[in-house]
Amino acid sequence: MTVVKKLVSLFLQCIIGVEVLILIAAFPVLFANLTIHIKEYFHAILELNVKVFTLGDFFTADGKNSLFPFIFDRYFESMKILGLGIVTACLIAFLITYLSLIVFRKRLKAIKYLLELLESIPDLMLILLLQMVVILIYQKTGIKLAQVVSVREKAFLLPVISVSIPISFYITKVFIHYIEEELEKQYITLAKAKGLTFPYILNLHVLRNIADGMFGTSKTIFWSMLSTLLVVDYLFNMNGLLRVMLTGRDPFIIGCILIFVPFFILYRIYEWISFDNRKDIG
Image (cartoon, rainbow, N blue to C red; front, side):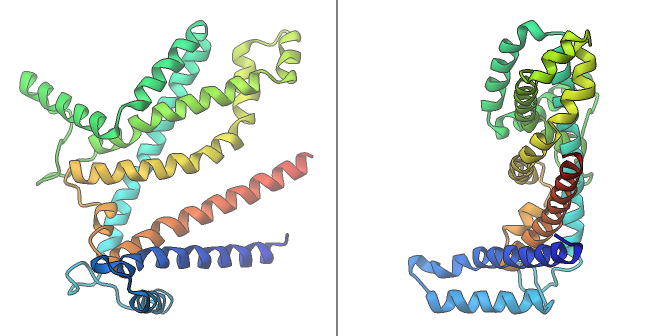
């Protein structure tokens, strides 16, 4: 597929994605007051299409103030926390996985069982526990480790940790699963027969070969962290993008587009590059 065809395909896919988001954004109109309003629903769809594709005026929940540039501030603030959360979660997962395979390999079964238990703990409970720990330490020692709630000073460190820790258990579990599958392949047996050490095989071959598998899992990780980010917005009184999106139809559709379009493009570009690399190797 040529570059032009890829770009046209990407553009059409983005348009279809935005249309689906518009259908969802207008959905509450269809069942307003517990009755079906088909005519009003299609009118809302048409209205949103005109506003989105002609770059019309979008307003906050009160219908008086423009949504721009207010929503961009909320967007970049939330994406900063989400981005740092993803990096932190991946670092935690990599560290636990690496130590488990290098140092505690004989206890790997127990570690996986522990990860299953930790993953089953609700995000809300973990976040509240983190807040309680910070408050207790402050009460006992007078040391303020992090801002617990955004009032005069914005909370930042604790929200990043709260977003990253719950999903890090899942990433670690998936990481270990992919590595175990890779270790059962024939080239690993051949590498061991040549006298190569396990850390060398793990670092040079296994981690590189599971990259595509982890990329596929990253979509699940991203959407899971978005749901956690909404909980974080409320518990830390942050008024972030996810919280603003729930205030009205205009904030919802613009927030969805701001989240969907950039990440959809990034995923497609990565898939193209990954496919071209595999084709060159083949």
